[in-house]
Image 1 (cartoon, rainbow, N blue to C red):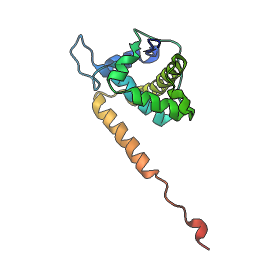
Image 2: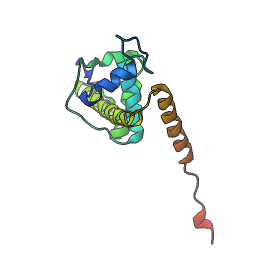
Image 3: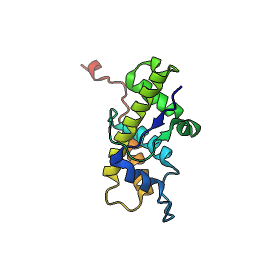
Image 4: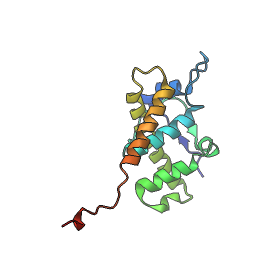
Length: 154
């Protein structure tokens, strides 16, 4: 198997650093590490729409094994199958590993776009992210479709 790495989009590298906290200034961000930021961003991105690919990267890519150890392997697999509607994307091959990683990166990029817009001008990132999650949850609960019985009314 290839040693696939998850790339960091250049457009969001500084945002990822801020969300992890600045190690030099001892500031704490809402996330423990870059893999956690990308995992959250990918889940958020999936709730927003299709993946957005990118070509310009920044810094060292993160080994996929870091994501696997942190428990993100299932998320990466679910996003790939959900996007493609093809369970064959779970095949244990270099080609499928690459495609799953690209889909995950695209969803993370979409989620980072959303976070970039939501966090503009905010000081309390943790609270802002909590509110974003709450709004998503409320929107999901209110959009639950029930049985439409209007066609039965004469």
